[in-house]
Amino acid sequence: MLQVARFLVKTVSELGYKKPVGTTAYMGRVADLMEKNCTVQTAAEWLNPSAIIEAFESRAARMAVHCGKQLSKFENPEEGFAELVADLVEAAVV
Image (cartoon, rainbow, N blue to C red):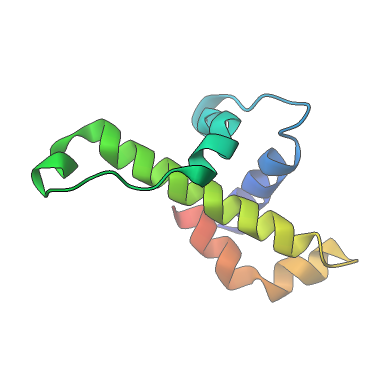
């Protein structure tokens, strides 16, 4: 899980100069995803796969950015990973 979390944090940190591809391609829309609020109003709307995907992408983007910001506060990245292990694992699970 921590390897996935490291990859997500690295992807977020490289957004300004490297376009994410593959399973993290959605991170290329991180600014948009950070601003989105869920528009689902009814249980039936959750049957729309794109609504579910958007919700997960938004949550994953928010969590990865949050972890990246928290890690940047540490002088030693390894100390940061040790301190934020619970948040990082949660971000990786999403």
